Length: 110
Length: 115
Image (cartoon, each protein chain N blue to C red):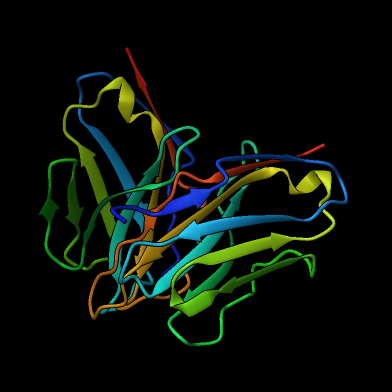
C-alpha cells in the first residue's frame, strides 16, 4: 500500500465544509485512494474511493490532484455527527492486507 | 447476511482463560480481516485471510493468538491464556476480491475485557 500522510487533527465549524488533506506522493498508477472514518466506539465506515477522477457520493467528495500525489476529502456541510477519525489509504487492485495509519481526528464544533 | 456479524458483542473474562471471538463475513466475500483496537488507540492489524491462500499472520502479537477460517466463510479468533493487555475491541472486516476497487465492510466489533 502507498504511504499516506495526514494531519493528526482538524477542527471545523458546524455547517461549513470540512476539507481533509492526504498526501500520497508514492502512490502507484494502479492504487486507489480510499477514505474511511471511525466514529467513536463504532467499526470503521467506508466513505468514498477514487483512482484518477474526482468522485462524489451522498457522503462526500474526493478531489485527487492531477499528479495523484495528494487528495482532499470534502464534507460539504459538516454536522456534529461527522466528528470522527478519518483514514486515507492508498491500495492496489484486488483484496490485500490493509494497514490503517493514525488518520485525522476531525472535530466539528457547534 | 446483509453485513458483517461478530459475536459476542461483549465478553468479560478472567486472566488466564481462553476466549473465542467469531466473525461471519458478508456472503461471497473471500477476504477477511481481523483488527484490534485498544482504548484510545488506532486500528492494529492482526491477520488476513484471502480465499484458500495461507493467511497473513504478520500482525498477531504473540503465539497466544490464533485464527482460523473454516470453509472460506466464518472465522474464529482465539486468544489463549488471556492477559489484561488483551483487553480491546476486536474488529472483523470482509471484502470481495474483484479486479479494481474493493471496499472493506466492518462488523460492530467484540469488546473483550480481561479482569
